[in-house]
Image 1 (cartoon, helix red, strand yellow):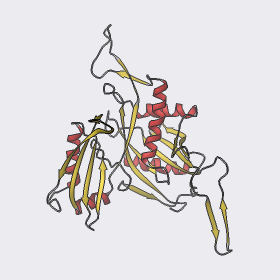
Image 2: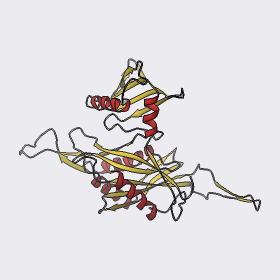
Image 3: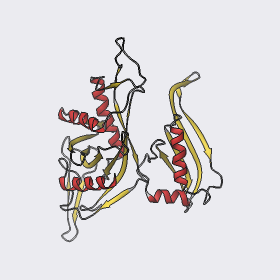
Image 4: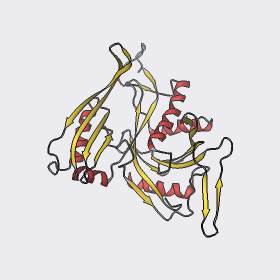
Length: 324
């Protein structure tokens, strides 16, 4: 990618909780807790056997646009040193990492603070495509920050028990909980075309279960139940196949299904597998996620920065507001 170009991915963030009797908080309140962690320098996560660190570097909230911008950086000590060459002058040089340094990449995450539906818990988001900073890693980082806060304070968030339970004096019982943020990508037109022009082979509906040892084998546990559905003669027969599948997934999500998996053969004969969030219909990996190329960024961008790059963050914010 050129220095004046970037690819941004379209995502949805679903806010849920770690307690069945708790209701999801507003995303703006979760962002507030992340800012608190950042203010006390507790917004990072060591990965890859502590050879790399991913961290929240800066958070900015635009109250007028109702958009939060988060700058995330990953620094990897195992990353290759940078090599530069000038063929005309036949000169070259290598920028070597110093002790404690890692090759760094930074990504902007733009998050709408307005839910997609009134009173809902799903929000639009955009993530800049950057090496070493995937949506999976971003979600893992944010979850780790919130988990540490919750461990230090089990009443990090509180709400009335949605079961209607009450205390002895008749007041609503309060539940302390931890919010969870799940990222899923909006499907690209290319994905839907590949699916509907190809041949559906199989659908798996996956339900997570409490881990249970298998017989006398402590090294084996049963933790999922998979319902496998085989497709017959779907090529060119099912109208709006993707819409049909997401409707099925939404029905099954109400029955406890936590993940759906689609296996299909593309028109070029290649087999492909895609995991889907059954509740939102979002994709759980970035390969087929909807994306937009931003060009003519001025001034151009480096691979990383000290924090939010204002002129590029403004571009992402405008794209997010337009698309939500």
